[in-house]
Image (tube, rainbow, N blue to C red; front, side, top):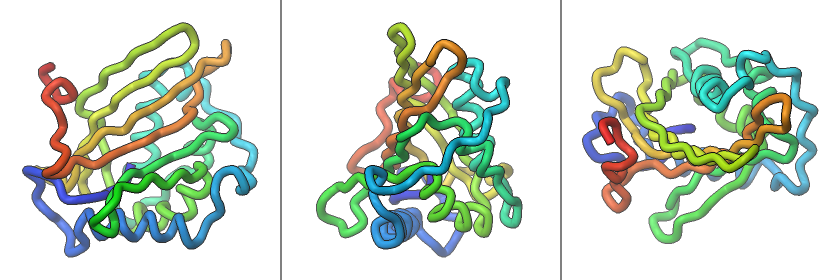
Length: 197
């Protein structure tokens, strides 16, 4: 969902490294926001039915709403409309170089802590492969992504996997959580999660 740590085969396009960005985002979330259990998430705006009619539609909407050039405002109401009450977004990283940590935040907190960075720096994230499993009204998708500052950049500055958990309540799809890890030398993306497999 956001730049996080060093990536194999990546070409940096900004003086800020992905590892620095991850450390900043986790620090901002830790220092500036309460945990989801104590945070009051605002009621989600009504979703566009086309955004939530299928797993493909809701995941496409997430990538669409967070992506854009520098100076381009994001539609955070659309973003919030995709998430179930109590939903979380959880980056995983190793900002201190020692232990991996997960920081769970709400969609409101994500918009508040990461929104300005995405809008000021330019950020385009695209899905390049997906593996989905579904049982009844619940689903899980491993969505492999590439991140670029400009959509036209020839190489991504980061890749990784967004783990989506989803629910269909009988009328629409909801995102319950997005949990992600950026590719690194320690954790290259397995071939089964890359295009062509």
